[in-house]
Every structure is written in C-alpha cells, then in structure tokens.
Length: 192
Image 1 (spheres, rainbow, N blue to C red):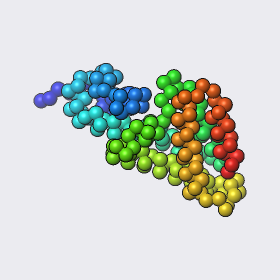
Image 2 (cartoon, helix red, strand yellow):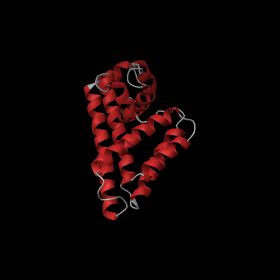
Image 3 (cartoon, rainbow, N blue to C red):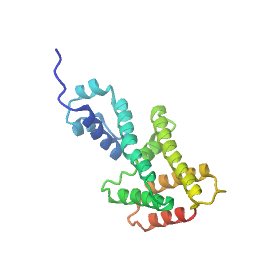
Image 4 (cartoon, rainbow, N blue to C red):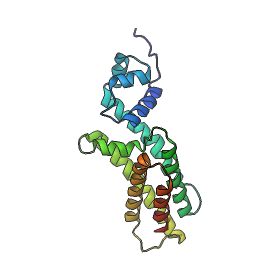
C-alpha cells in the first residue's frame, strides 16, 4: 500500500499559481515549485505530471478565482457606468497595492507564451473571451437602460474594454502613481 500524500494538491495548485504569477512560466524552476509547495520533486511529478501540467492547472485556478471575480463585479446591480468605473478602479488599486506588481496572470501569460504554447494560449483566449463577453453584456444592459447610446456596437465596445483592462494591468506593473490609471479609467467610461 502506498504512502498517503503529505500535502493537499488543491493548496499546492494555489501556491504554484502564486509562483507562476510572480515569475512567469519560463523563469519558474521545478526547484522554485518544490520550495513553495514544501514537497519533494517526486511528489510534485507524481501528482501533477510535469511543470507544464501544473502551470495549466494554476492558470485554470487563476481563471476560476481572479478572472471570475471581474465578471462577478460587472454583474452586480446598479448603474452600468458606475459598475464599470468601480470594477476598473478596483483592478487598478489591486495591482498598485501588490508589492510584487504581478499584474494579471492571463495578460502576463499572453505576453510570455502566446504563439509558442498552444495550451496556455487557448486558456488565455478563453479567459479574454469570457471577459469580453461580460463587457459586451454590460454595454447591452447600458443600452437598454439608456446609459449608453443604442447605435454603439456592443461587441466593439466589449473589445475596447477588454483592451483597456489589458493595458491598465500592464501599466500598473510599472507606474508609481495611480493618476495615469485614473485618467484612463475616466476617459474610457466617459467615452461610452
């Protein structure tokens, strides 16, 4: 009979997500993962297969927790533009408050692996599509309520808002002042 696992794989995925989020895929070594998870290399490979398989699970965890929270914020009750401003402001504040300036794991993964890693690219594409769909739905709701002009293309505005989020998340990694991010947020919401 085999020895029982000495760690919780679910917790290990969470810890691995943090390492990959901070360092990126290529800069994360198996030793980094072993150190962060507090397990041996044998347990790491026996449980997750390899570094890439663990990375995919960590990226899925990010999608379910972090990216899902963005969609939930957009779906809260209240005026559309106020929800959008609140959501974008929350992202900027969260990124600026992070001492590691990790930004968005999906954006970071797209910048690092898009076009070279099919599985990671597909996961990020699905995350972006989900976010873009949530923005499109928000725009359509705003059009029904009269907050947003009905002749505006909801799909185009959804794409614009996704692009705004990607840019904000990247800018937050290098800016020291929230002023630039606030200007982007204000200009984006006011343009609707």
